[in-house]
Length: 323
Ligand code: CP
Image 1 (cartoon, rainbow, N blue to C red):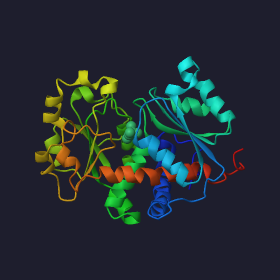
Image 2 (cartoon, protein in one colour):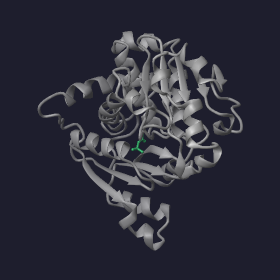
Image 3 (cartoon, rainbow, N blue to C red):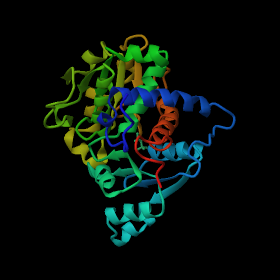
Image 4 (cartoon, rainbow, N blue to C red):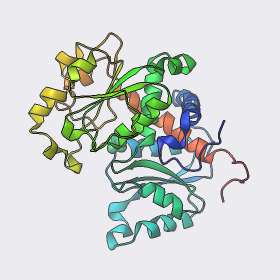
């Protein structure tokens, strides 16, 4: 098995073995999360900073919860009240944080590639991409895989059932970092992904994407899907101008109650959040037993504990523990 990478910037950094390792370690941490005292001493003495240049609820809170459950010290860097507001550069910001003895930096940034750039600047700290522009959001894809594997029986059985699974990724693919990471992750485990979106919400080129297909007909794809993973219209990236109106978008691509009733028995509905109820998913559908949205959020803590543990909790070949 290849060693776990020094940074987690994209799903392809892990490969199939790395993904499976994260899922298996996350099983142990999910068990820790069910204890009355859901805390372990694994990263005592380590310090982890969350550095978010874009808004977040799930990713930031779950990384900070994960770090605390591993007994790490957590520094929550609020860009709005930092010296970034005075014009300090990203490089100076992250080098300042590293100089304080931080072991890992969890970065969300509106620019694709910013976490990779941060990783090049830092000498010791591990970098985790918590979402960069339209590029990738690798831990969200790992959370989704963990949730699907769990729903399919968990462990080796759940993993085996992902192979050949028909996955529909529906919505604003063009602006979605989650879709890019999901595609890589599902493909690595043998699932077959179909993108469903209006032509305006697909990227200009899909060359090199490991896809089974692209469709503009959600009803057709739903009848064959084992997993339906919905994406929010990214209003903050201008998605509103790519659809005639929200009402027409929902009519064509929203998972309405009528559409949900056409899903195969046992089909899973996922959404990375935040959901906009009534647009890409009907409120009633979000609350159906087939919806695994809350499980995704819950699993976010265990999966991010696994990622932090694998990055920081083990000595690496040829390296001692980080200073
Ligand atoms: N799924 C996701 O990244 O959610 P947040 O933006 O709330 O972190």
